[in-house]
Structure formats: structure tokens, C-alpha cells
Length: 357
Image (cartoon, rainbow, N blue to C red; front, side, top):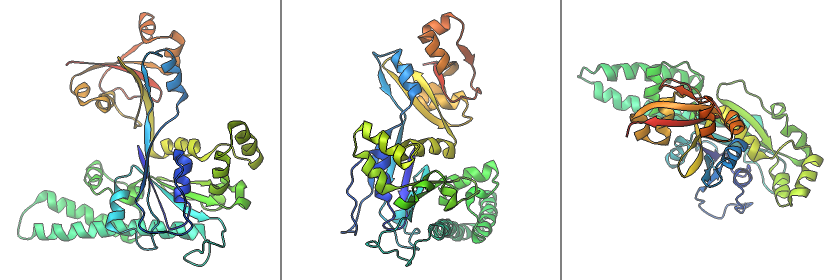
């Protein structure tokens, strides 16, 4: 799972990156030159994995991970820049950082702070970038179809024409009802407006209360979009404190939790993914997969050979496993379920895959 953090200049992108990853990248008030993306791979804390691993302390504990990429700020209208697009298209999810704080030393490019307007502008740019991609493909397809009978190409042109109309009307790809065939075709385009999108509001110190109610600044009922708020300045100060002082300040400021755990929980919901666990010869590992994944495909996440030779899945819930104390004891007590290829993996399942080598 990976997220790309992006947005207009001086909104707090690198600050959010630091909060989510624990990095300490220096934040510059003014740019000093070309900035390469900041990259970090972070483990996903999971108390379920900790408890399962406690049954097998001789094995290595391997949590699921999430990759974060922090892109340099872009000027209004520049999302369609090809090098910038390449980073955004590779992401599983996008985290758009919006300025909602006051700082006289950092002038706003538009002359005033208006988070809702900045969000609308960015969403329009994302749709426009997808529209340009569709137009580029349609032009190439027209040339390919001249004087040649190509049913597949004609069907693609039909779908792209319909998509083009929707994008011109400002509709994001994620808002459309697509057939499985269209979903498969459009996957290769990696449309930005089809990706899950967080709007991350960086609020002012005087608006700390809005962290728990970001909808008071901006709300959206659009599919695949979620809004969270954080106060980068205050939270960075809190992270510099020792653990005891952190709790005091969190309570004083009214923070229910810091940005990292809040973002992770929300990201699993937004991306519609779950976690299952495996116990191997040398490791106890957490795996992130899309919700409703069949056991056969979950096996392939571990290794393609396991998917190819799939025989059956031996399954138990993590809590039940912990009650028995080991997979073997659970098996001796007939607590292990035998499931086939079509079994839908559930969040928290512990699975041992049997396969033909």
C-alpha cells in the first residue's frame, strides 16, 4: 500500500510526511531549488500481529508496510506536468494537503486562505489531467482505426467517448458506474480521479477543535473521498516531547490521537483493504489485501507458486488462535476450518495455505 502526498506550495506536505513517517525532513519557508521527492517505508502497527507473534517469539515479526512519497509543491494548473503525473499515477491513494492556517510570512498564491476553493481547484485539475489522457489516447486510436476493422478498438473508442463526456462535465472516474470490462481497460490508464483521495486540512492553532470536525471546513459525499484535519505546527511540537509529556499535551489540546494512527485507520477504510496473517517457518507476517479477496488470490500475494498449486486454506480467526495458544493446538481441537479457492478472506484471519509444489 502506498500514498503520495501532494498539493500546492507551502501547505504543509513535508510536515505531514514527517508526522506520518517519523522522519525529520527540514521544512523550508522558501524553496531553495529543485526538490526531489521524500520517500519512506513504514511498518503498520497492529496489536493483533503482536499477540500472534507472542505465541512464536522464535520467529521474525513482519508487519504490513505502507510507502509514503512527499512531492514538491506545484503551481496552480500544473498537475498535468508529465513528471508529476508519473508519481501520482503509481500511487494506491492520494493525500492532498490544503492550507487552512494563517502565517503572514507565507503569502498565499491567491491572496487569501480558502481551503474549500483550493480543494475544488485541485479536484478540477485532477479531472482535467485525466481528460487530457483520454484525448491523447483517442487521437492515437482514431489513426489506428482508419481503414481497418478492429472490433476491440471500436469498443475502446466507444467507452473512451463516453468517459470523455463525463470528464468534460467535471465528473471524476471514481463517481461513474463502470462495467468490469471498462474497469479492466481503464486500469491501464491509472486515472487520478479514480484513485482514493484524502483531503488533508492543515489547520491553524486557533482552530484545534476542527481537527475532530473537518467537515466544518470542507465536506464531500463523493465516492472515494475522505477529509481529515491536522495541525502540523502543534503536532510537530508534541512529537518532540517524551511519552509522559505527550499524553498531557494531547489531552490539553483535545487531540484524540495523532495523525499517523488516524491516517492509517482511515486509509484502510478508504482503500477498502483488510489484513490477514500467516505463520511460516521463519516469520509471522501481516498481509494487506483488498476486501472480498478470494483465498486463491490471497495465496498469490504470498507467492505465485502457492496460488498455482493451491489445494486448500486452513483458517482460524486471530483471537481464537490466541486462545488455543498455537496453530497445532487449535488443529488438535478441530478449530481449524478447511476452505477452498473461493473462500472470501476475512479481516484478522490467520491462514496456512496447502499447495502442490
